[in-house]
Length: 94
Ligand SMILES: [Zn+2]
Ligand SMILES: [Zn+2]
Image (cartoon, rainbow, N blue to C red; front, side):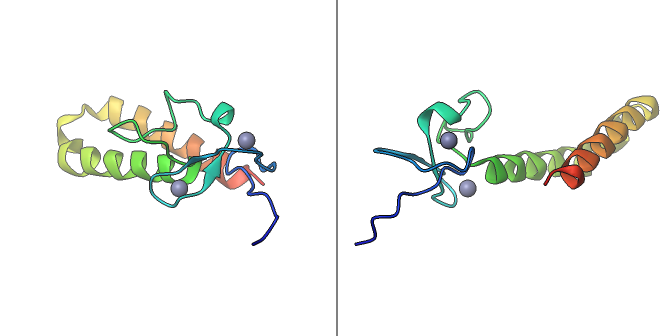
């Protein structure tokens, strides 16, 4: 019905023709916008940037919750510093 073209969840531009779809939320993406090394789930299905980040956080959450006491203190501080940098990047993005 609608002639509006879907907008790519990665670059925000309209998609002509066939789109890849996020396997979680169904968001459309240009094939060329998806780095298949990064934006895929465990079985290789495409993920939008939000769902890819969320899946990685869920996994990290499990690892840290179960094994943080097995990580040496200086390494835990190094990991925490990387997380602070990521949080700053997320909060600084438009
Ligand atoms: Zn795109
Ligand atoms: Zn998604």
